[in-house]
Image 1 (spheres, one colour):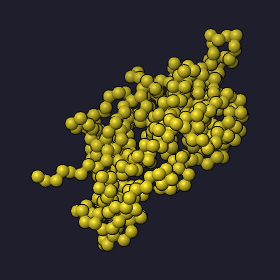
Image 2: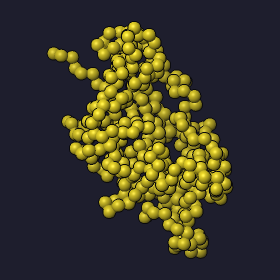
Image 3: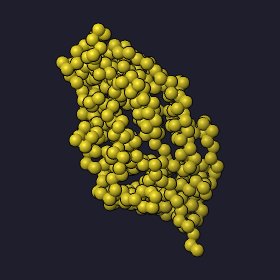
Image 4: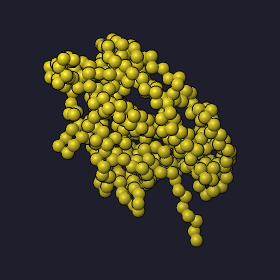
Length: 367
């Protein structure tokens, strides 16, 4: 399949008596938001045979808005029940990350295992492309398919797509990669979509209010422990590691220090929150694990643009091989490099891949 948008003239109307010349089929991941709604509308207008599919990730999740969009666009609509996979591959790792003193990134996991795992397999089984409302671009070059940042950098979501491979990009469409959000809103009104004024979802979709309440309702009750400075002096007590993230200042209480204290690291084995002054939160070096590269080859020993969370403007640095793993060296120190988040690597506009930031490993005591 060629990853390009055909015009209506290139593909005649679907005719069951002429199956040799059908329109390309596209499965659109309809979330019920404005972005996926406009994705479906744009592709239908360009002549694709569009089918909307919603992933129901937990029993109480509503698909009403997605269904209404499908009805307005007069496209087929289906719901895939993926609750068991969502729990196993997204929610349980989310809980486990906090147990280990990490700050998880559930959206990247959802993209990898569900949207571009289960749903991409579903689309391929129907000999169709998969399209989503992500703000990113798939570009075909002489070297192959690559993933690039969205034109609107303020909406770019390529960071969350770092696990995609070139062989997947061949069957994926990101129609919104050329548009600004304001333009998408105008298009939605023009298409008469019921989601045109629906607010964007800004939080983790399965956490209704705050993540601590969610974790505790899921049975994660972590014990109290020490708050200590980097020299090991105990300054106070905490009510559970899951209440803290790297760089955090609030919630530490009065630690008896003349200057404000920030969380420098979380030591899960010791059940300890380590704090320090603002400067201690900055770092230029960290390791990654479980990397994924679009081309299959790590971009070693070259000047790259490296993003350590979303949103983050990124900083220049290099990826180096060290022993059996990978280490990142940044050209300038960055605050709050957090285990559990992803480090994603770019060369100009091209997203090359990424890996998960490793937890802090304390040095061995002197012998």
